[in-house]
Amino acid sequence: MNTQSNAMPETSISAQVSAPVSNFETRPLYWSVRRELWENRSIYVAPLAVASIYLLGFIVSLVWMPRAMHGMAPPESTPLLIRLAMPYAHAGMLIMVTAFIVGAFYSLDSLHGERRDRSILFWKSLPVSDRTTVLSKAAIPLVVLPVLVFAITVALQLAMLLLTFVSVSASGAGTATPWAPPVLEIQTEFLYSLIVTTLWYAPIYGWFILVSGWPRRATFLWAVLPPLAIAAFEKIAFNTSYFGSMLGNRFVGFAVEAYNLTDKNGVPIDPHFIPLSALTPGRFLSSPALWLGLVFTAICLAAAMRLRRYQGPI
Image: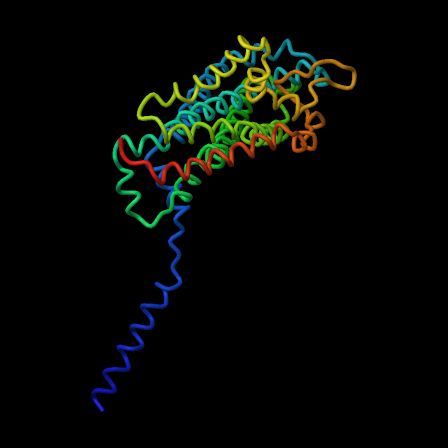
C-alpha cells in the first residue's frame, strides 16, 4: 500500500516537469540575432547618438525660429512647405546614411570577427547551423537596422514637432503663421524610402558578408578593390564602362525606379519633400535591377554559409 501511494506522486511530478520541456522551443535564429545585438552595440548606439546630436542642434535653432517666421510666405506656397519639411527630411537622411555606414562595416566584420577572436570555435560547438548564423548576420542590415532607423526617426521627428509647437506657442508667432509640416506624409515617404534603399543595397550587404568570411585581414580592401579593378580593366581593355555604370547604379539608381522626379509640368521635385503621388512602388518592384540584385544577394549568402562551414580561426 505504501509503495503504491509513494509511486503515484513521483509519476505525476515527473509528467508535470517533462511537459513544459517538450514544448519549449530554442528559437536559434532569434537568439542568434540577439547575440549580434549584444556583441555589436554600434548597431543601435550610432543611430541614437546621431539622433541626439541632431535634436540638440535643432533645439538651439529654435531660438531663431520665431524671428524667422515673421517673413514666411502664405500656407499655399510650395517653397514654404519645403522650408518647413527640410529639418525633418535632413533628420531622416542623416540617420539613414548613418545606418548604411554601420550596416556596411558590420557586414564586413560579421564573419571575420569571430575568426579573428577565435570565438568561432565556441559558436561551432553549439547546435546552431551555419545557415542560421549567416541569416542572423544578414538580418541585422536588412531587417533590424531599418526597423531601428524608422523607430528612432519617428521619435526624433515627433520630438521636433513638439518642441516647435512649444517654441511657437511661447513666442506667440504661430497664431497666423504656419509652423508644422505634414509630418505623417513625411514619415510615410520616409518608410517607403527606407524599404526601397534596403532592398536596393541588399547586394552590397550580401557581398560584404561573403567577403568577410574569406580573407585573413583587410576585408575592406578585398571587398572594394576587386570590383574597382574589374571596372578599370574593362575601361582599359575595351574602352567601355558597363561594369562601372552598374556599380554606380547600385548606389543611386533606386531614385529613378522608385520616384517620379518631376511633376506633371516637368519641374524637378525638391528631394526635401517628395509628395506621395510621386512614389512609384509598382515600377520599383518590377525593375529587373532590383530582382537581379536580390538574386545576387541570395547567392552571396549561400556561398557565405558554405564558406563558414570550412573556415577556422585566424
